[in-house]
Image (cartoon, rainbow, N blue to C red; front, side, top):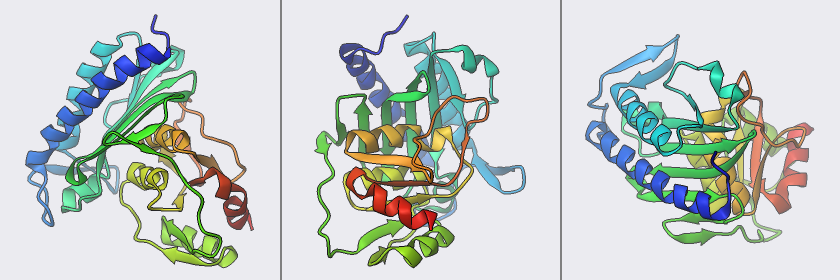
Length: 267
């Protein structure tokens, strides 16, 4: 049975990094900057888009990652849920294209998101933004990295406005109780929104209800290892691989800013 030691996680991380890059390469022929995707497009339910690129990446990643760790369960946006994952200590949590709507419309903010969850918490996370050529990664206790450079959140100047990104209703709510702020454009990929908090280009990332495990698990670990935190509005961090892998409203910030920021959302 796999044991999440430093050495085994580091070795596995290199293989997952390679898988993410290969998946990103599979997606690129379908992507057209500023234009509708070359991929066939359809909808799940009323409004959730999916493309043939999502399915191609999901198929590749499931085959490749389960080969790396056969004993792990599988949870992905594009695979029918198998309750057998609930009995596994380790679970791959994957979004082959986080930000499908952006991908399909030619917007660059989409990503390949891969996490390994152990007993409800991520222990490995890799997030690739192919159009930006940025690969974020973390293993538990090993720090967070982007393209080989360490991510470490620093102090924000007391007088500087907090740079906030997220759904407009949440940003409006935050702005009513926190000043000064700078409103940034909403990042279509939730995983990338959290990663940009980890790298310090966003100070406060707001998350609406109904995000899923695959949207946040990899970026959650990257943020945490960079010195940030993702919690719900009660202050509790997310738990993964539950029967219903759905979450309520959340906030992502540097740890030092968390008490004040979460207070603004509770008011």
